[in-house]
Amino acid sequence: MSTTTDRRVPAARRTGAGPGTPVPSPQPRTGRWWALVVLAMAQLMVVLDATIVNIALPTAQRDLGFSDGGRQWVVTGYALAFGSLLLLGGRLSDLFGRKRMFLVGLAGFALASALGGAAQGLTMLIVARALQGAFGAALAPAALSLLSITFPDPKERGKAFGIYGAISGAGGAVGLLLGGVLTEYASWRWCLYVNLVIAALAVAGGLLKLRDEPARSRGRIDVPGAVTAVVGLVSLVYGLANAESDGWGDAMTLGPVTVGVLVLVAFVAIERRVAHPLLPLRVVLDRNRGGSYAAVGIAGAGMFGIFLFLTYYLTSVLGFTPIQTGCAFLPMLAAIMLSATTAGSILTPRVGPRPLVPLGALTAGAGMLLMTRLDLHSTYAAGVLPGLLVIGLGMGLIFAPTQNAATSGVAGDAGVASAMINTTQQIGGSIGTALLSSFAASTAGDFMAGKTPTPQLAAQAAIESYHTVFWWSAGFFLLCALVSAVLFRTGPLDVDPDAPRAMAH
Image 1 (cartoon, rainbow, N blue to C red):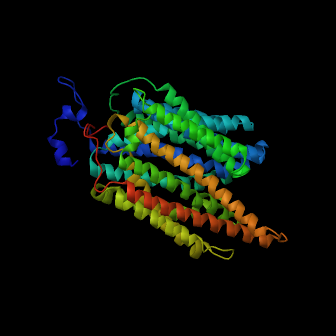
Image 2: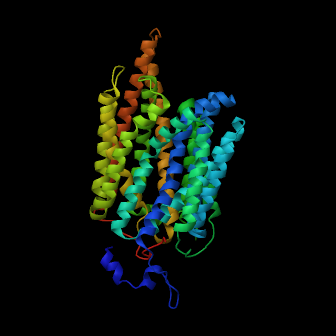
Image 3: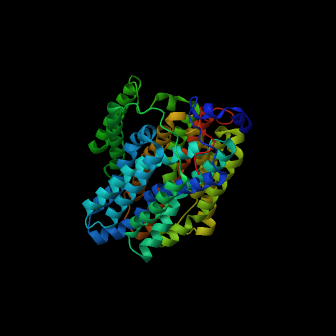
């Protein structure tokens, strides 16, 4: 919808107000951009928390004295709660107000972070991480849906989603850098305490700068849908997490994955029949939104190849410290910011996601292929940096258009539509971590089979495993390009015609 057309639509029609209902007056343009700052801070906190704790884990393990198995649960506890509760969090934001759920999510995330930072043992740390994931599941979809209704104008919306998409794509790299700095110069506990600072600023900004659409209908919570969604997603994420350590043929992997798939099939059947579904199927059956969810899920699987295994290469082969490792990803962050903001503000409003997302996926895949040239004697400048820059440019072209498309024209379903893109990225990342880790382990094992172990041989086996991961990641991005080219519609995105023109002050 163009801006000119929107001006001709009566304000009462745009806001869904009836005769005699006061219509909110347009707010100053600068207020919306301050709202973007608040929402971006919240998104950064959620995204970077997936990686910032990884840097701190070895130090926390030594301090609290837990096993490697316990270390895995510090990561998995967050992923289980976050991935399984996102749909419920998204629907709650639609029913009870996005701003309210945004503030509740921020406050809860901060308190859970404080609990984790003060942890005196493994159990307390895992509980804190699970609570972080639960409140993050309320926060993330509320933030994205607030962004969607704050920027209804296509041009401003494209620019806003470009910035937001850049933060989503680069948050992992920011987490690595910030985690390295805090762990080395302060304490691993500050990797959790830092969320208190971010959340406090975001809560203050949210109270001052965010406004919400009135809830259209409270309706009823779809209890059977919520139960099956949570059980299905928990089982799926849990099984995939076990695949890394137990293997794909183990009962602890196959059992939960099978249960998860079956329960999610039951969830879809329930959603087709209930009056107030947790996830209205119209949300995912739209070609642009379905294409966004598929693209983000597949790209999320490939993205872990760069964050996880390149980190291994930088630390074990090049001997980088945690801070150097975080700094090594900064050029990729800059490339993501450049392409995401360009695609968001200039290209997406004009051409839509169909040409941009496949191009971004192919570009990121080409960057992964560059990484397959790395060996024991490569340098950062000549070996790692070119691939990082290419991957960053590609990822920016993926994230900004898909997040925009996922929340365009959804009216009262903005919360659950936003939750779905976070859910698919979480599930894609879990699948990618499990698959790539198992491929890496089998490649290293095959390389060492029948040979006398030596440090040089072990190092070369690691290189071979990294190459396998980078090839598979390139394949994921190629699949993302193909799926995106088929599913996305041609042309600019639809925008919710009932959205008020300014939702921030």
